[in-house]
Length: 135
Image (tube, rainbow, N blue to C red; front, top):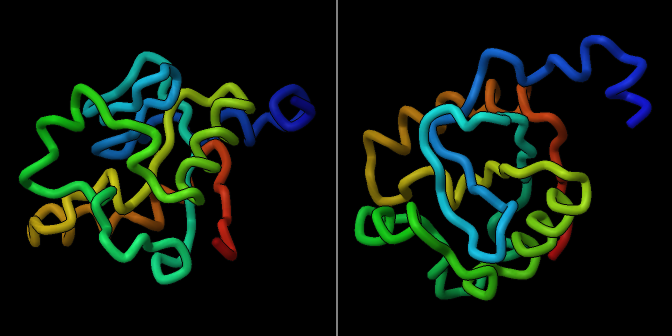
């Protein structure tokens, strides 16, 4: 709150940029959104996949499940570190979260190349970044 109220740059950090896909976390059901949401302030998650991988990686967005994820994604489908990031975003009243495993189509080389090249910009314009340093 202090940062929003007293630091003119902080509140404007995400102005003018929105990632291709974001995870909407403001409802019981999660879903991927595309385009520019009305309130496009978003958080980002930085984490080491090896630390949180379920071994099955069923939470990854792929060509096969992207259509379904545009309408819903269950919280219990996510590893605990990703669930925690959703909870932190909700607690801080941020409706959108960028997680690379969910917001990049992992088995689409073209999408992965395009989106991975934008990661620096995505983190730079995030309202805040959650760093999960351990699972």
